[in-house]
Image (cartoon, rainbow, N blue to C red):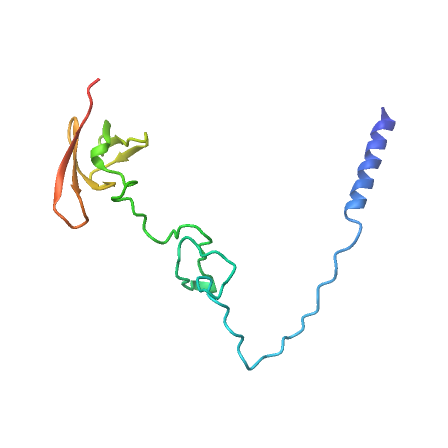
Length: 165
């Protein structure tokens, strides 16, 4: 049994010696770069026709320099600095299509539990927005939303009642 342990230790030593056998290369000497009087020409913008052969990105976002010289590059992704448009359209959430599933009361706050048609639940307090409406008040067994067709237009009251089981 001692010979097997010794053989395993010898194999481990051989493996470790093979992994790190050469020393790291010495650091390169720092050579100053010559200063050029003429500036380099600017590269073509990625959204211009000069960038032939590349498909145009899905979202054209302006390149805004940030602190430290960094800039956001969307790379076919949504710009996280632009607001989401969840109001209106076929994918927009409408208060009239949701249902009130519960009301939670505590000593400090009252919350409404609302479920959309796709099964996603929302926990709301007065003043929160949900799709095309704003939660105005939470009653004993209902909630009242102010819903407007367009931002800035006249709002309608939509009341959702808690379903009795």
